[in-house]
Image (tube, rainbow, N blue to C red; front, side):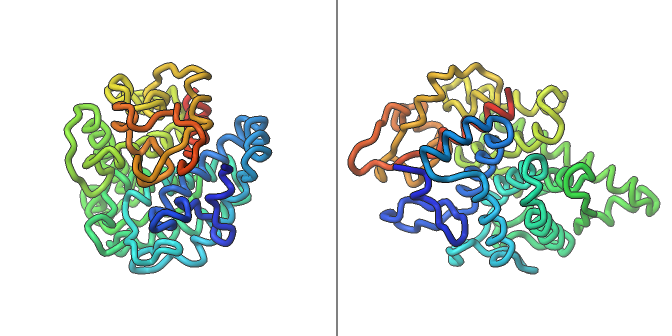
Length: 329
């Protein structure tokens, strides 16, 4: 199999295998992880990128197709639509890896920055009006995610004025000084972001309106949030070191190489390469990124030793793992 078999040429979406139900379901989540990873590899390891193009027929330019399609078809004043799957509500689980993709674009893909900026502007308008990415509880944008948005709006990235619906609350103690209010808002959001990641460390899962820690799928998405911060500030920044340390408990419990890389644990070339030919069956999982089910990796239900065979589908994890290694090395 090749990665190109999962790519919808019109939208740039990375689909589930067409023979599975709902091939476009969770398409923003899957596509954001994949395209962000390809852009990182192109920028930091061009020989690896060339090898992926030769072997799988897909390259980093497909990220531009995805962002352009998303901008044209999915943005709205009352929320966002899921591309080619409108019956699914947009959620935070789709949003967090999309923000990671926007951070990668800001750093490594200037040719995509116009579409990425328009998407971020649409998100800011939702925030200013107090709307979520959908009108469901899962679509509310928590303040810890607000910190990610605020970071993306910095002059070094998209240079946008982040207007959130709660900004007036921060203006009062600042006597109307907008810069003071924005500084206090960022500090408050940053504290909530730190608390959300710390909750992963203690292993207690609970629901929130931001970085969900309600299941392992969402804990995996938090790796994207931490990697966004690494791109913004560098891995040696004190805050980034503290944020990545929250994933050590999962890395040490065998949750797989994605958690090990972000936590700073050693991952050998052989262990990483083993995922290049990993496949999965529909019975083993409901998607083609195994790292979203880390306890299945821990328990040996999903393994990099699953080679090609009839009825099995190629996993995308090797691309994601290569990019995480490059970001965090």
